[in-house]
Length: 500
Image: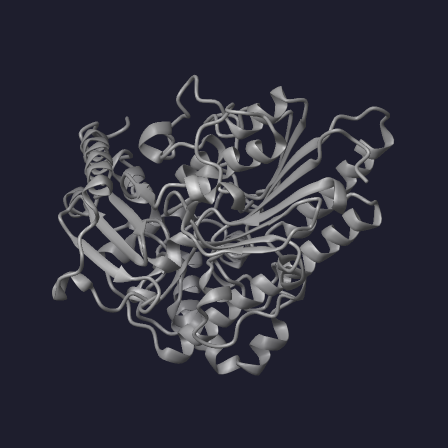
């Protein structure tokens, strides 16, 4: 029995968690006993689609019910359009205490995405170098990409002798590359602290009389790159695959997870990629344990039957599918197809095999809570699916990392060597359309791709080459209109020049 008129709501976003691992695995799926159990008492949406290919526009869509061309939060220096109502604001206006626990620095008040949260706790910590004076500027340091581990160590030693205090340089380099490259001593990316903080907050909430129901937003980063071979939950896996670890550290460096993938194509040996994907699964398994502890606490307090509990992702991740690592400007299934579980207080189980967009999550929750038409979007509750649109759109206006490079005179380390002319050629936008059993990709550089979602999930055969059936005219008109908006936004973005 619920002790309050309204149920609590907990939304967990797992950054870069792709649905492929659960529904279309190439090999063994991750061992996720908690998620498997939760699915048996939840609405399971097997075809959830992210609104965009990277965190900022995708989360802004999840928070507003708007497409990226509508909400305007698409680049590092963007701000959410004024007057746009956020999910947290809707919950707050309906009597909820709204709290955010995040390991993602993009979730903040400054850009407007966190507007409506009464409290925000961000657990992201950038690399803090022990020494700041009489040392090398590591931002300008570029590791050689074609050298072995011993040669790289030799290179680091030589550089450290060249400028500043040698001892300080070596200590700074260990701190810098531990976070960005090797991760020898990384325990996790904040999940433990975030879950512990959420539990402590709920305990305080329980101790207060007449506390309003709460809306907790939790953003976890474990499945976002980089992946640390010797993190404590990966040690045994890495020791048993030590030869692959050495190859991994030699070949998969931080630059390979950036937008350079659009310009340069890298070759990785099969066993290196298998090891990388294994690390990714280990991250999922670790989160499963953390979420299990969190849910056990809710259950011990009798809150599981008083809470709407949602687990999903802001986008997926490419792990060398289509010869790329990362996610920012890739429109394939591995990057857009995400898991979605909604566990209601009544613990109803149902599998929904229709394409739905996560931008409609606010409307769906508001519909369940009985708020009426106070948020944008369409409800995808099972009893409303007959009224849900037959297609789902995702879009990204242009590459966010290249945008930073074009707008800043200082060349960032990971984009060193790429001039503005080359980058401008790759500053294209993309619109993705899921309809029936097909996935349509339209890029503003003119490229078109169509794939069979059901029979070619890994998207190896572009059906345009054999004459695929076109979209119905009614949907085509909507797509063409939105694609034009995307092209205009892309053109306007490119015309603004460099930030001084």
